[in-house]
Length: 377
Image 1 (cartoon, rainbow, N blue to C red):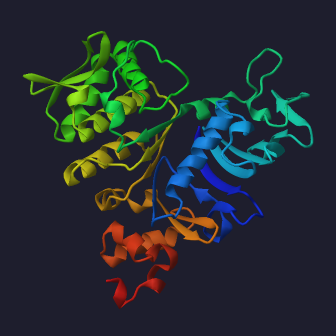
Image 2 (tube, one colour; image 1 turned 120 degrees about the horizontal axis):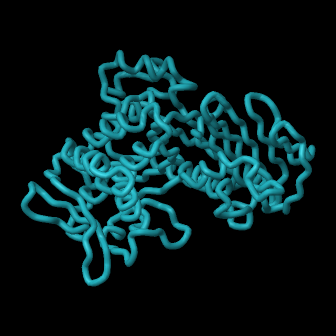
C-alpha cells in the first residue's frame, strides 16, 4: 500500500490553525520517492510528523489520547494494486467526529451512518470515542482492514544525521525488544541484517556490499561481532582489516544502515514506508549523488515509499524534479507544489538551463516563467 495524497488541518478555527494542502487547495500528491523541499519553517519536518502520526494511529501504536493535537483532520488517498482508497478522519477534543473509508468510490465505512461493510456484508460495530473503527477487529479477532494496519506498521523513521545510535550495541540480535521499530534503533538494524542473511544468504550480503562499493567504500564483507557480551555490526575493508560499528564514520554507518533495510525490503518484496530527515548528511558531494542514484533505482516502481527532507543542494540537484514537493508557507498553510498539480511549471524549468536547486531559490515553482526576472539570475 502506498499513500498517494494528503490534506491535513490541526486546530481548525483557532489562531494556531495549520494546514497541509496542494496548490489551489488541492491535495498534496506523493510518489514512491518524495523529496520535501522548502525554505526555513515551511513545514518539511511538520509534514513528516503528520505522516508519522497517521501511521501510528492506523497501526494502533497510539490512540487519540496520544495524538499530537486534540483536534485534527486527515484526508488521505492510498493505492494498493488496482484499488484506490480514500480515508477521512476528523476528531475534536480527542473524540472522533467523522471517519469514512471508500474503495474505488464505494463506501466501506461511515462511522456516523453506522456503515461497516466487510466481505460485502454490512456488520454492526461498537467502538470508543477515541478509537478508530478502521483498526478494529471482527468477531474472530481479525482486522476488518488489515492493509491499513500493515501500512502503519511498515513506516520507519530514519534520521540521517543521528550519530548516537552508532555507538549502541545490543544484547540479542535475534529479536527486537520493545515497540520501537525505527531503523535508528540498533535492535531493528542488527536484527534486520541477521534476518536478511538467514533468509537470503549471499544475495543479501552482496546487495549491501555492492551499494557500499558504489559509494566508494572498499567493503569486502559484513558481519555481526561480539564484544564483552554485546553485539554490533562490523565491516571488512579491502579483505585486510575490520572496522567496528563504533569505529565507522557517520556517513559510512548511515549508508550501511540504509542499504541493509533497502536490501531486505527489496528481496522480501516488503511494503515499506520510510521517513528520512536530513538525507545525505555526512556524505560528500560524489557520495550524495551516488546515494540518490541507488535509492531511486531501488525504490522506483516498488512497494517501497520514501519521504525525504534535505538542505543539501547536491541532493536537490541529483533528484529529478518530478520527485520534488516544494512547500511554500503562506500564513497558516503549507502549500505543496508538485509534479501532479504543477506539471507544466515543473516541465518548463528544463528550458532555463539552471540547476534544480534554482527551482527553489528563484521561486520558479510558483509562477514559472512569469516570475523570472534579471534579479533571479
